[in-house]
Image (cartoon, rainbow, N blue to C red; front, top):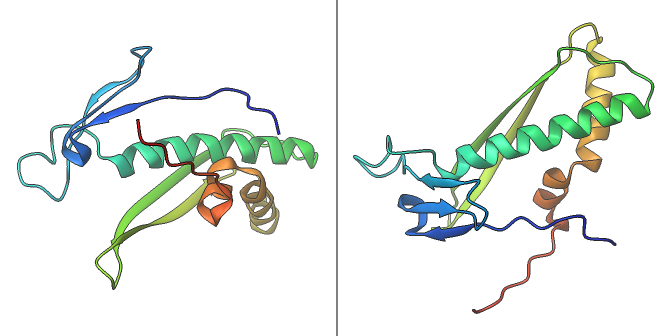
Length: 137
């Protein structure tokens, strides 16, 4: 495997804190929908993840359509990310991906979505294919 690029972000204060990147492209105060008064301060991690996953999956969908010889135009992907409390006091995410593919019949649209889900890095990460290395700095 070959690393194409690496993104870096630094969090301070957790879900109610901030996120910055060394290059200055992101400098965000987060809002926590579970904490009164902070929910309106800024986006929460799930919102940021939904946006990133939506863009990544949409690119995979466009690439898949092209690879299979299907032209898609004016497509849109809507992503819902829910924070779920499990039965053990921990948390997990639930994701829904919704695609609008004008002019594509529903069966073909589903096939394209299924194939894109196989190649999207975010989809793969949620299946447990992501390598996570834990490092103490």
